[in-house]
Length: 161
Image 1 (cartoon, one colour):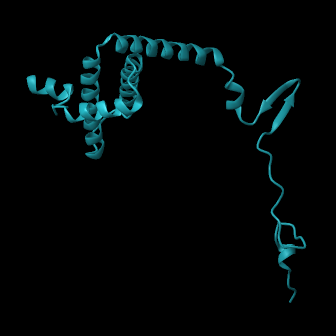
Image 2: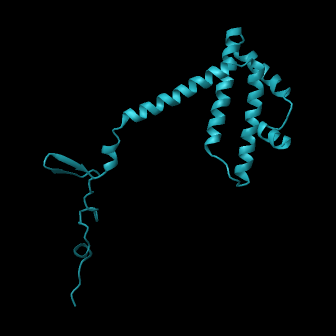
Image 3: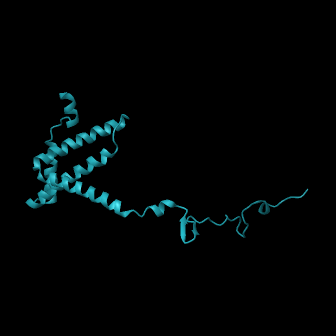
């Protein structure tokens, strides 16, 4: 009865330290057909569409600039009311998510960014008035304590109907 060694039966090559893995395959295989190179990952070749991406980015930036103009046109009191309303809407979205109701996931980021933009404009105005960071935080605490809790606009519209 003949016995076969493990090294001979295994497709892996044997080294002094033990069994080594086969040589790795290259991730990017390219073939040349009459001057044309075909890549294994076709998506890499198709990614060269910067013109369309730049156009989409320009549109998004224009919308952002328009939104900032609208925010800057508001008074500070209107900004504070809008922030409270948006935070209420954000709370409702979180409730919908926890209750596994249908909602748009992109609304979270959109609302958070809008709130951040409004608070940034508010802080810019404070800086123009010469209010330092410490006083700003003190005023923010007072403002948060003075907030009267009310339903967000989406619930107010439902109750009126």
